Length: 67
Image (cartoon, rainbow, N blue to C red; front, side, top):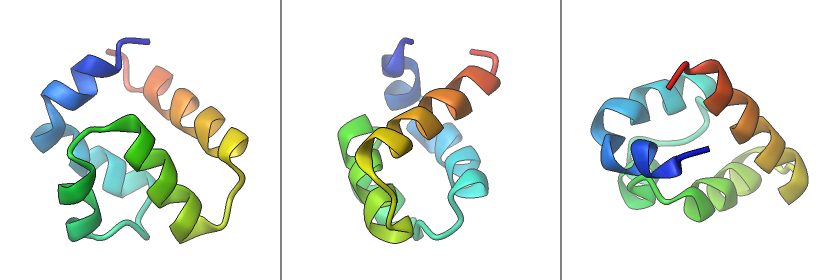
């Protein structure tokens, strides 16, 4: 997985992230700025999920984007 693609195109990608994880606020997304570790942490915080589950969810989401 090439997360650099997500980070480099964050302005376009964050809308898709918000569709998937709607509890993330626009401020959250601006602070995350494409950083995967920050995205993981914020999803954990907003949804109360374990780190491993969040990582799997992000990996699944990424693979479905067709990048």
